[in-house]
Image (cartoon, rainbow, N blue to C red; front, side, top):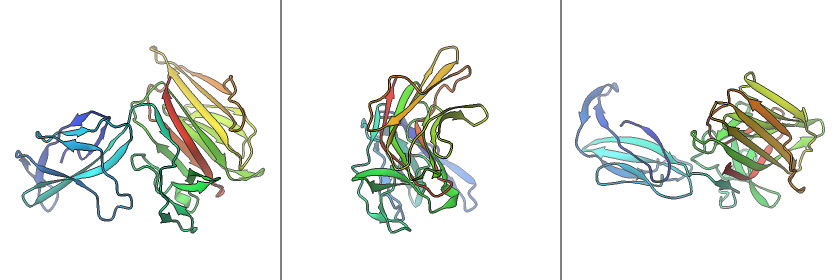
Length: 290
């Protein structure tokens, strides 16, 4: 079935074509007749989720007009033949997530109750978990697998542009050992670096990298905020600020970085790096258009 994966926004639609294949996976013939479609949840799926979309009489998949993102799969049948597609429906801005609606039904290797992160998010599973923390449900960086110590998670559409993302963030540790926690805005990473005690904006490390000293403490919640504005000539400005969550938001940006060849679009996201097994946490994520 082509395409085998789809990304839709509320109200958008997509058509499919199908062809049969032999035992070696080689195409045999195109299937012209209509397929029979049904929502499908793999029996081994740890997250029982369905894509909020329906097939109409013409065999076109139409996304529901909902503000909540969703992800799932569909099964197509044609006689004895079966095929599968999977997809996501991502809402338009604004986006909000505080994790309070999650039910903690899983137990990790440390014996801690958790829930898997939202299925429509790319790169989140096994790298982050929803857990209880400070009487709230939060997103926690996992530290049990060394392969996942560095994680970048995308939570929105790759076409998003000119928006602001902010969230509550925190690192475990002490004054000698902390981790890194950050946000992704339009392909820029805005990160609080624990051991370096800096706030940094970077893009691919070599393309753009600017930092500012920023003293922050472990086991203390901070608010991290980033904004990207682009102009018609291809330039842009990346702005970032951070402050203790218990304090008022400062008027001034901590960093304002002009970029002559700015990224013109990119999914909002999250970044975490725990090289010394100090967990980091995220809560109360908001993404709004500028």
